[in-house]
Image (cartoon, rainbow, N blue to C red; front, side, top):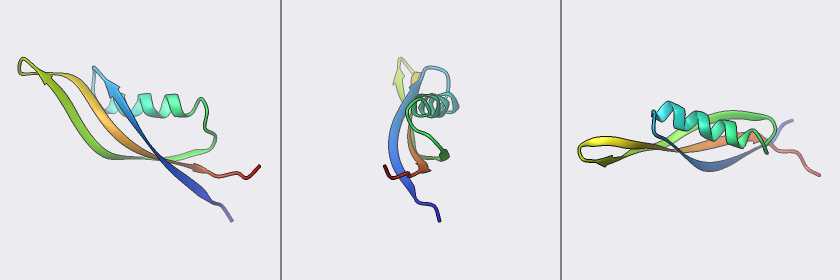
Amino acid sequence: MSVYKFIELVGTSEKSWEDAVAQVVATASKSLKDLRVAEVKEMDAKIEDGKIIMYRVKVSLSFKYRQG
């Protein structure tokens, strides 16, 4: 039997929403083991002078929970 924990993280990118998600996963994988699923909960973008300057995503990550 397995137990999984969920956390929410926010990632940003000047390139794309996909890159913002990749940043979340890459950063989280440095300290969390057994990442399973990344679910994008929200996406938005910062706009200046009619152009998108920053993409932002809220991501729910699940990973296998290990006691001790």
